Amino acid sequence: MSSLALRCLALLCMLVDHAGLALFPNIGAFRCVGRLAFPVFCFLLTQGFLHTRDLRAYMRRLTLFAILSEIPFDLLTFGHVSMLEQNGLFSLLLGLLALYGARTLRKKPEQITIYTVLLMMIAMSIRVSFGWLSIALCLCFYYYRNNRLHMSFCAGLILAVYSMSLQLSGVALSWVLVSLCSLLALPFLFLYSGRRGTATPLLSLLFYSAYPLHMLALFLLRMLRIIPPNFLH
Image (cartoon, rainbow, N blue to C red):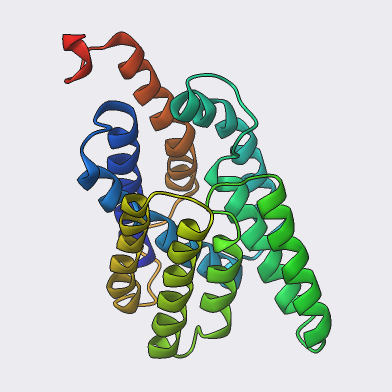
C-alpha cells in the first residue's frame, strides 16, 4: 500500500468513527472501525517527518489546522466550545515534536527520555485526544522503521498498554474493547510499500481540510436532524 492509500484508509475510518459519534451513538461498530485511523495517521506523520524537505513548514501547517479544527471538534464532541479535550491534530503535533527531539538528541539517550516524558506529561495535562499515545507510536515507528516485524510488535504492545490504561483510569470495559480494535490497523501498516502515491499541493490541502470540514458537516447534520435516527425525534 502506498502512503496515499493509507491516508485514504485513515480518512475513511475517521469519517465512519465520527459519523457514529454524531449520528449513530448506539452502534458500536462505527467506533470500532474508527479505531484504525489514529495509528495510521501516526505512521504517516512519521513517514512525513522522515521525508519532508521543510520540517518547519510541516509543523506550521499541522499547527494551523489543529487550531482551525478545535471549534469543529468541540461542537461535534461536546455540542459547545470546551476545554475538556483538544483535537487529534494537537496530539499529532506533539508526536512530531517527539520525533524532532529523537533526531536532534539521538546521541543523548538520557535527554531523549526526559524530553519524551515531558511531552507525555504535557499531552495528558492539556488533555489532547489519545493522550500520550501519539508520542509513543511515532517514536516506535521512527526507531523501528527498518524492521517491519519489530515495528508491528512494538506498536501492538503500545496500543494494548494504552487500551488497558483506559480501564485503570475508570473507562468502561466496553470502550476498552473498542479501543483494542486499533490493533487491526497493524496489518495495513505492515503492507506499506514505501511508495508515496499521487501527491500534489492541492491534494495535501484537501486532506488537511477534510478534518475540520467533515466534523463541522456532521455537527450540522446532527443539529438539522435529517439523518436517521435523529430525524425521528
